[in-house]
Length: 376
Image (cartoon, rainbow, N blue to C red; front, side):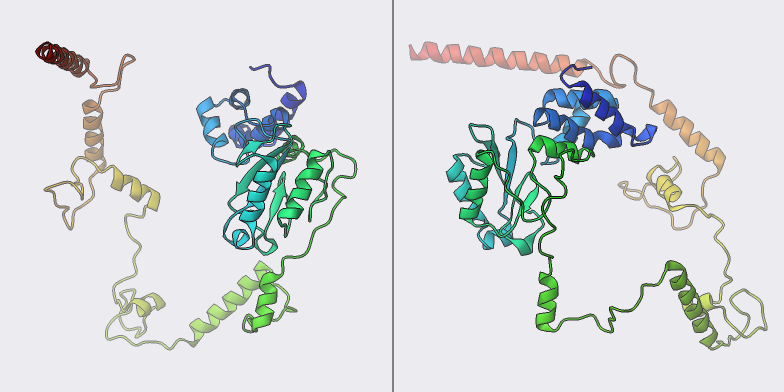
C-alpha cells in the first residue's frame, strides 16, 4: 500500500468503506476520491492507486470514474475553484462577459490556476440556477446575479485572504475543506454552518404563472394529501362500482369459460371479443427466461436473422434431451483456451505477415537504390 496519505486519511477511508455492505464496498469509490482530493488538492496517480488498493479494484477501474466526473481534478488546483456559468441562460444575461473579465484580470484561462495558487478559473456548462443568472460559484457555493465588477471584487478579496459571504449557503471554505465535506464528513469549523442564509426563494416560475393566469384545473392548495392506504381504498371502491355498473352481455352459446347456458361473458372476454376459454398458458416463463432462450437457441432452432433460414410458424419447443445434446455439441465445438494463448490462435499468420513486411521493405530499399543509381 502507498505511504503518501496520512493516518487520518486512512482512518477516514476505513470509515467510508464501513458505510456500505461488505459485498458492495466499491460503492465507496466516489467519496473516497473526494477524500484523497482533500489531502492533495486533486486526484493524483497516487490517489488512484490508494483507492484501488483499499477497495480491491484495479487502477483502470478507478481512473475511469475519476476522469468521468468534473468535480475530480486531475492536476493541482487552487484553494478556490471559481466557476462561471456560460450556458444559454446565464450567457444571455452576461455570463460570458463575466468569465472573459475574470480571465483577463487573473491572467489565466479555463482550468488554469493563478501563479500564487489561490484561484483556479473554469467556465461551467450549467450550475442549475437559471433564474439567478449570471451565476458564479466558489468551491460550489453560489454567488447569484454577478456582473464583471462584482466577480472581480470576489476574487480580489479571496486573493487578499478574505472569505466573502456567498449569496446563499454557509461560510466559504477551501477546496480541500470542501472535499472533506463531499466525502461525507461534517464541517468542523466553529459556527461555519450557521453563517449565511438560504437566499431568495426560486419563485420565477410561480410569478410567471400568476402573471399569465396559469393554474392547475381544480387545484385546491388546502386539500390534504391522502395516504397510500386511503388512495388504494378509494381506487378499489371506484373499481367495484364500475364493475357493478357494467351491463351483462348475452352470448349465443357458451360463455368465455366454455360453459354453455349462462348467457353472460366474463369481463376479459367482453374486452377482447373472444369466446375462447380463459386458460393459463402452459409455458409460463418469466420475460428474463424467454429473452435468454431467444438469445441462445438450441441447435435445432433456426435463427431469425440467419441468411437463407426461415423460422417455422408453428413448432413445438425442444425437449430437455434435445437441449442437453445441443449443449454438449456446443461444448465439444468450443474447447476452452489454454494457458498459453486463446483457442484457435496460431503463429502462422503472424510469421506470414512478418515475412511479407520484410520482403516489402527489401523491395522498397532495392527500388530506392536503383533510382539513386540512375540519378547519378
